[in-house]
Image 1 (cartoon, rainbow, N blue to C red):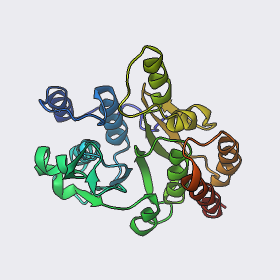
Image 2 (cartoon, one colour):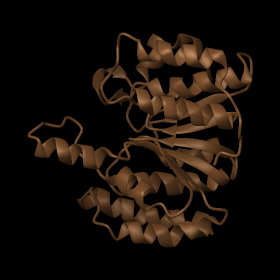
Image 3 (tube, rainbow, N blue to C red):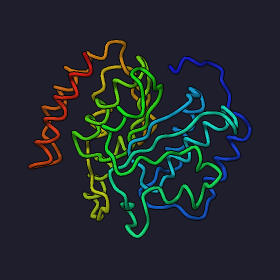
Image 4 (cartoon, helix red, strand yellow):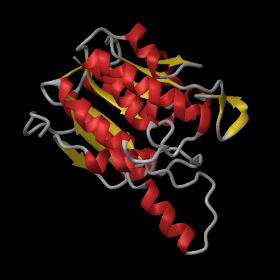
Length: 256
């Protein structure tokens, strides 16, 4: 599906992933083992020069992407990750800045990671040209329709048939089952990413709680899909919902 049949990972990739599995500190909210295996595979196979990420948190996933880019393009290549987050202080630890794990755990990759904080996905218009990006990663606010809005804002800057990786595409279902079992959830059970992935009518690849959706050749085909998804009641409310509704319609103008 990625159009690069037969590509194999470099030996150093397996060593790196093994070291990630065995690392001593694993912060809550960061992507899990199967997630970063999936993300590494896509980035490694497609081997773009740059990747845009929405949702930085500790910076762990940005480092995973940067590591895959370095293995594909070399230590001195012009490849990098732009990671975007609306919060200056990390959501899981407000005593630390967003992206703190990059300098603490991955100093050798820090020069490849450009923190765009505090910003939301609209800043992509200042970072990329139309049809430039081959792969992006969305792992920010999972409440419907936030993942859809991030995707639509990014779409003009992604080439036709490009890929958008979505995290927590089973979060709602996992959360509901946990609540039914009497568990307390720290992060809620938002369905936004799950509904987006499950209803995606074009090419897609599932990998458990992470997946990738492929843009169609005709971006305007996203508009009827988005309208159908927008008919599902929003998980955000009041003023935030009104702002999102207006922003979704505004994003349509860039798709035609």
